[in-house]
Image (cartoon, rainbow, N blue to C red; front, side, top):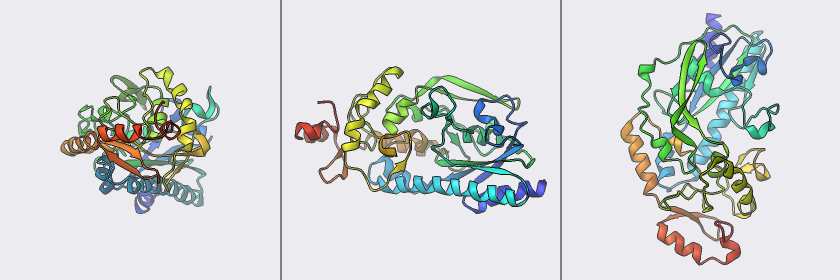
Length: 347
């Protein structure tokens, strides 16, 4: 089993992961429902967790609104690589005689919860497997951070009947998250609470991160329905300027009201497919809480500064996006005919 464990981790790294670890039913004991490996494989004994890094070269052009497409495509590719590693690794373990289930990197949801897939509960939580197995650790945002790439990673997992040998979590003293709150500040939706914390127990060890507000906040802003920060001084990559509510219960109704304008706006070439979104497609316009977090605090500060000084996105008649000053954005939006203007803000 030592040999199989070593080879399973090595396969993930050879195929594109930066780090890999092992969680078992014992090390996950006492965790939330999304840590129950038998949910996807009744005879499950362990899981391989790994992280695929995003290209850091695309992060600052994303924050200063110089290049939307490069990070968008890299994000898609990293998700595909992570899902592909899962498939290859599950096949390897199957060929060794151990039934295994590959887990897609993203957009997989349980259908047996109160609201079905709309509760956005994963079959198995990549995050919990990653922190328990030592792939990374929780930042305040709840994103998993690795020692080298911060939160700019895509996680993947494989559940198997092989009794792989568990790896240890990263010691608390090696977690460089210092609660700088830049993840919260970079989020236009107010998704991260920043003060109240959630604590989970996995195999007798406690892990904590900030409480999150309703997930519709992230759908509404990260999905591109709207993106103008309440200050009016900066935005995400979304040209939408619809109001961002204060209360959780107001987000889903706000999202529904903007579906029509969202679908009628010109789209970029790249797209994410997601069955929960109108037309099964969604834009990636944010992810700031993930991308701002870097092991070097000076880099975090620089990225946040780029964001808040990057201006406001507007969409030109040809569908292209452009970052302009808040004043210029007001002028250009005000010059639109009412029908076009209604695609971006409440008229």
